[in-house]
Image (cartoon, one colour):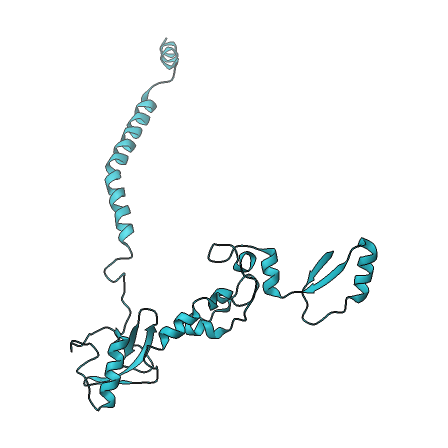
Amino acid sequence: KAIFYYIADERVDFRQLIKVLAETFHVRIEMKQIGARQEAGRIGGTGPCGRELCCATWMKNFVSVSTGAARYQEISLNPQKLAGMCAKLKCCLNYEVDNYIEASRRLPSREVVLETQDGEYYLFKSDILAGLVTYSSDKKVPANLETITAKRALDIIDMNRRGEKPMSLQSDGNIKEQSSHPADLLANESLTRFDKSKKKRRSKNRPARQASAKGRGKAQAEKGQQKPHGAEKQEKADKQ
């Protein structure tokens, strides 16, 4: 028996081809249509994680993967990073999506606004697995960001429903001040710090270079004063 695997967008009629192949090879011919994931599994290769492809090692049943799995895990919807070797969405996007869905149920809703005595706060981002949420005092841009636990956010929501407002988002009542601008890691560094070190090295080596240059100049001067071989004999002959 000989099995031929092929890829096609639609169903293809191979009855005439099967007859020709059976008469040529004198075996039973089977034509099986596979998808892009099965093709990648048969070809094999190494994934971006550095390990052999899952479809080539242990996966037998392929489940459809949607962009919703990436959204639940807050992964950037970049097609180049989400696509696997088969040019389809990576199968590993479904591995942990159930844990993310379960953990996201314990987080406050994005639509709920927290009200405190120092102002209103809007949900900016959340760390699902760590159970942390970051709020901003501005709805559109990150400003005065404060990170609290999901439990603290839910407690504040319950207080707002009862008409109460805490002093601040922090559980100890202290206001955590954060700058809305990102930290500049090179604020105290100079862009010409490496140039200064080169100048210092050059200044250190300058006396030695000057001394060597003077030595070479003196040697050349002495060499210029020396008379060539046979010049003294020629001068005596001229005097005579």
